[in-house]
Image 1 (spheres, helix red, strand yellow):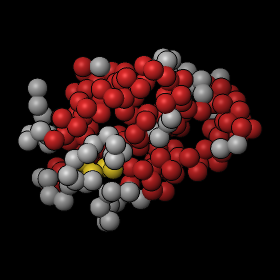
Image 2 (image 1 turned 135 degrees about the vertical axis):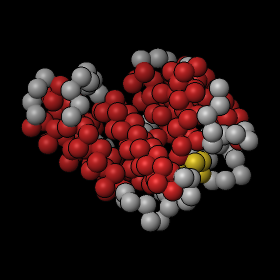
Image 3 (image 1 turned 45 degrees about the vertical axis):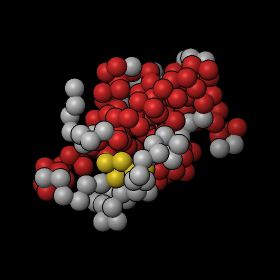
Length: 196
C-alpha cells in the first residue's frame, strides 16, 4: 500500500473512532485489497465447496466491523489485526456449525505458514488450530497474538512489534517459541480434542 494510503487509512480509523460513521465507508475501499489478501490466506486450504469464499469472508468481516464500538483505533496494522481475528472467528464458527451438523465429517483446513508447522499435512484442522491457539493464549497471550498477527494478518515483525507495543527482538523470540509450541500441540495424537 502506498505511503499516502497508509496515512489516509490511519486518519480514517481515527475519525471512525471519534464517531464519524462515514469514515468506515471511506476506509474499506482503501483497505479492501489487503483484507482480500488476509481472507485469501485463510481460504486457500479450505475445501472447495466451503460456503464462504474470499469475498464473502471479507464482507462478513466488514459487517462485524460496523458493530465494533470499543476499539481505540491507532493504526492500520491494528485494523488489519482486528480484521484477521474476525475472519478467523467467522471460519471457526462455520467449522463448529458444520461439525455440529456432520459430527466431524469433511473437516475444513486453514493454511499455516510453512515455517510455522512442518507437519506432514500442509494445513491444520481449523478447530484443532483454534483449540491450540486458545491453550497458548491461556499460557501466554502475547505469543498467541504474535501468531495471529504474523500468520493470519500477515504482518511483518516490525508491524507486529508496533501493534503489540514491544521490541522486534521480543516478537522474534515469541514467534520462535510459539511455532515450537504449536508444532508440538498440533502434532500430538489428540490435537483435535480438548487437552488440558
